[in-house]
Image (cartoon, rainbow, N blue to C red; front, side):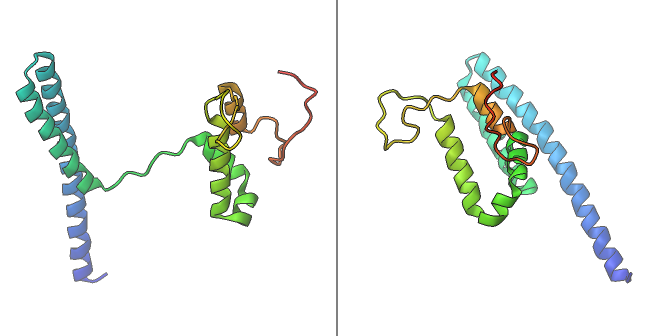
Length: 154
């Protein structure tokens, strides 16, 4: 490795350490600003609360600039559900995800006894117990195929 490359690596490492130190400082400052804001609100000092809240927002923005956007967390049950259906997803690509999302929205929509058939989830009732079974894949064979043997009652 050349001297210039070593210097470039050292500088990059130093910038990363400085950024991590600043992220830690931002967390501490943000927690302090939150405490100040909440204390001011509890004392009905809205002017101080507004100033502390502005400080919170400023620190949150600086944190986002340093860290970048956070990836949304995926429900592990949904990730497992999709993993078991890999052949379907490989065959149909993005359309497979859209179909699964549409089916999920339809199945979990609130029951509306007065809905007409053209609306989503018209008259569908879907209990959380069954939703969890669907997400976990109960009623499926080991290969992820539907098991239509309904002789076993819950």
